[in-house]
View 1 (cartoon, rainbow, N blue to C red):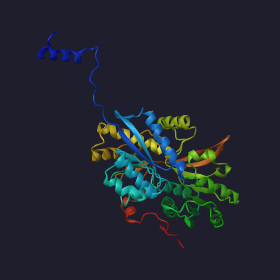
View 2: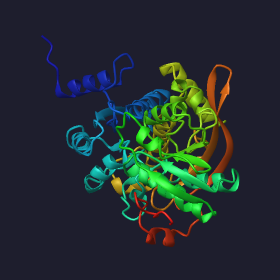
View 3: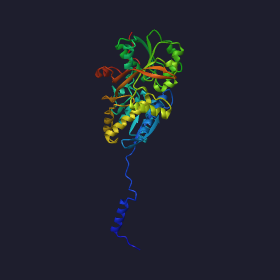
Length: 410
């Protein structure tokens, strides 16, 4: 029996490690970056909620599930479209699933319900919800919004209505919740500053099966401005045309979302809308995004999918700046807010000092081209700020847009 000396044993061990025919010891891999997604999969806002998930999934697929050298994992929470549900799911994502950041939620009332909690946990929140004060009077230092505030697309729409369409009077009709209030408030301010007048504001509840009580109040103006969300624009426009109303229709970003056009009929032809995204925008990243969505889902994408895809681009750019590090929350949120992209599905954009996007707003006209409806871009407003052309200090000294602000002029 041969006895192995201590020196021989060490030499043998070294040889086994260095031998090219033997496997090297495994190196520790960086932990995955975990992205939480708060979305809605049921109810009147579900169509946009599902698009949010599809846009996020496509982005991660395009990047091979890897961002800045780290594997990326997606954890989805369905809020059910309620403030309480959003709070519960946010807590689960942070405390149980240990996410590094959160995409979403969709609705303003959900975002307002979770803002303080998420900020207290120092978790970056890349929202879609348009709640104005998240980046205005009560800013969340861990919040980044690449979509728009509720009024950000309505300001240029009002400018277009007054200066180019030459409308003098309108009636507004919108869902009776924060997103609707802020959309119509923004439209009213700019429209009236340009010499127009809002004669009446109508507020159907978010879940309204029959708009007849509101439609009978429409008349005596140049146009109607609607601010519905989710599936409600289709229902409203069908009932609007069925009632024999012929006044021109204008709408916000949800009025003729590109994703919903396949469900519309000729009732949508002629609708003028404004949004931060257009499927018709020609850029390399938008072409790639649209092709991927059509390939993977069979549908033309809309605003929700595009903005979540863009959220992914922002996170990727920030991670590259921090060397893949998300543990230093202050450095990570600073990197997120410093992102400035020249090519994205919505075009070039950057963020203001409050974390809100400054970028293109597209005014579109819905037209029939062959057997399909298309939103043709009739004007692009570049570098649109959440404060429009107003002085920021003055803007923030005024109340947030609400159901009764600005008030109707009598």
